[in-house]
Image (cartoon, rainbow, N blue to C red; front, side):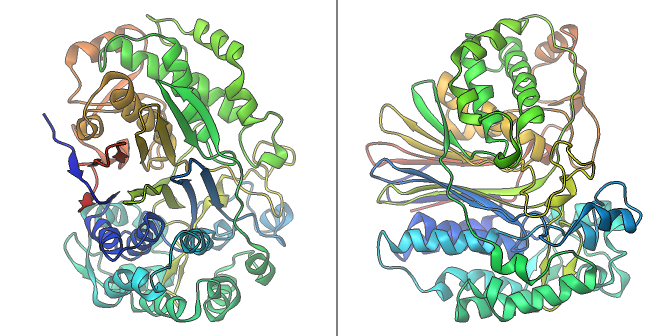
Length: 530
């Protein structure tokens, strides 16, 4: 039995142990879960730069003790002065994955921090911003130990990253790739964080930091301009919700794939599976995923361009009954369908007052666009690489349009008073891992840490791979794998523990005041509690 961490005062979890300790330190100082998540997010920017950074986007899902649930959509839009013609003139028929023209959307992460801290200030007096950013500044200036995941991904992607001279100088000085355990410093990032602490987070967009960012982005060939910085703001759309397994489950609305995460759970519940982690369980969740992804791929993007409303779809019980009736309990539906990619960090926190936060923050691909901005020490995201350059196409590039996002934080309120925040990184795998975690815990009573650690699967694409197979960790029972193959699934066995399955985590607060938490052994993270 794998034991979940327990405490009675507050709890955090993240994919890096240093970030979890940053969040815990904030809770111990009397800070809110909103402040703790901001501290974790900042520390991750310093110690997990291949997965996240201030040059990316973020989505927040917040549960308040009075029953309110709020989404903070801190994601940037396509460059206001960009155009399809610019890409054609540069010889591109699609948006490149790396380089300046991939850095074509505004970064929303820091605006999310700013809005979250404003929400915190409405609840109680805030901690100084210097305290929230203290650990991130220290690790950026004094150094952190490279994780195996950062060193491995840098080596794997060096051909497409080291052509950028500024990136190469920062990440492979003297032409040598660093190894896991090497100490890496980023003094420019430390200066940037120190400047934000001193001058306020808004200076990322309108102050000295913003001017440096724009200068380096322009030199790199990005289409972003000053107006993109001043025009950006955080949106607060209504959270998506669905009733599943005695809980109200929430997620972020489009442009995220949150609707797919909730649709999988609704469909699975209708299939009336009786046993966890057997053939029927995995098969049902995989088939539910296919149907949810068909809706997602056809409809989800910037809601201003969508032909169907995501919440209306989730509320259409007759439609879900019809989809469930199409699922054969013994045979796999033919696949593939187009897939999405992405690398991300999810983190969660719940404080002693019952404020619960599920937050996900990303650069999209590992190391984002590969555009390192030397004056500030930031990497810029390449989320806009998902845009299509054909007019009228799904997710077509339009100035001011928000790209489709794989990012989606999850949160659940149970009838018995429990509140659960959970999520994962992993692009295409995010809804699938969320489904495994939630169904194991909420429907079958699997202990929280066991639900996270247990073997997982992923249908479709992983980091940069176009594979459409059903990847299954080899720890799964051999009989289950054999039955999946017999049912027509294209099964691909992978390592017993692999980060392609995401870095999941969860925190649950019980009505009694007990906290339970879990972190993923596939990550570098841990639970922090007191």
